Amino acid sequence: MPIDAATIRRALDQTLVWSREQDYREYTKHDALNSPLLSALFGHHRLTRILATQAVMRFPFNVRPLLGVPRSENPKGLALWAMALLDAYRAFGEERYRAEADRLLERLLRLRSPGDWHGDCWGYQYPWQDLGFFAPKATPNAVVTAFVCEAFLHAYRVAGDERYLAPVRSAVGFFLNDLRVLWDTPDELCLGYMPLPMSMRVMDVSILIAAVLAALEALEGDGTLRRTALRLTRYVARRQTAEGAWYYTDPPEDSPVKIDNYHTGFILDALDRVMTRLALDEWREQYCRGATFYAKHLFNADGAPRWMSDKDYPHDIHGAAQGILTFGQPDNDRVYPELASRIVEWALTRMYDPTGRFYYQQTRFYTKKFTFLRWCNAWMCRALAFHLLKHCHEEN
Image (tube, rainbow, N blue to C red):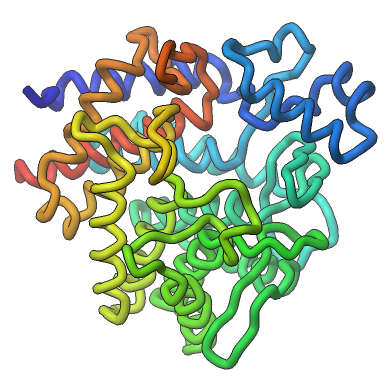
């Protein structure tokens, strides 16, 4: 039996309360090098940085407090909470939600990445070693900046206040002048993840940027941003597989991550935003094929999110949140009318502590019952608030 809206709202409110009590500061997956000890011992070479980061990330319990890793602010998390609060305000009309969202948006303005960039931009508050790059603390990146822009766009749509558009307009300068151009043809464009010497073409980056450009174009554009948004979108849409999937990178062999859960959802949601904002149906067939693949190959019958299309475990709470968002979209809700609700039920019955915490991952043999605020709570607040808003609209 589906969980009722009142129960979902209680979980949302309690999770918002618990997150605020932590001042929205968190440990996160890749923050091992924020440890003074690990930074001193392992921070000088690429392979040792990878070893330290991966070891801490994969540990069965959260060792960060023992290693002296400080809790830090995460701009993407703040953006997700702001969008959740704005959706809760739209659903229930209570000013407290909107006031807290405004407070988080002001905080985001103070967290802009320092440096001589061509526009406002945001990054993670820790040094980050991935397989293909090393990013010093606060290095801006396209994905974080795109999510922050979506939060300000969300606020503009709710309040109609022009001041919310200023950081979005500014961020366009960062997207189009600071990120490396990795693919450039007359009708396709791919931009880099960060303003660093890196060649990895990450599929969700270009479509997330395209969605932000499409929003500004729809509001006030002269056609220039539209053309760039279309080139970015074509690059991603044309690299969909025959089965309807997207690999994490192009070409696929550039990353050990292949066809994973939440990046697939990122692409689908951003593709839908581009089409909606530019009043296009050009990629509707690709979108529907992608949503079908996402439902069949990246979620189990009980709503549990698979890790990748060819790997069931771990079941990650981030994937659950993304599924609620993607399958709550009108087109998907008609085709898969119960899927978002099944994912909500799975998350609340398997991965939730009623004190206001969502757990990180369920493995085949045990559950990692610690909480990364952005990864777990912020994403689930965003998903639950969206789900409740949709429920309120259906009732009215």
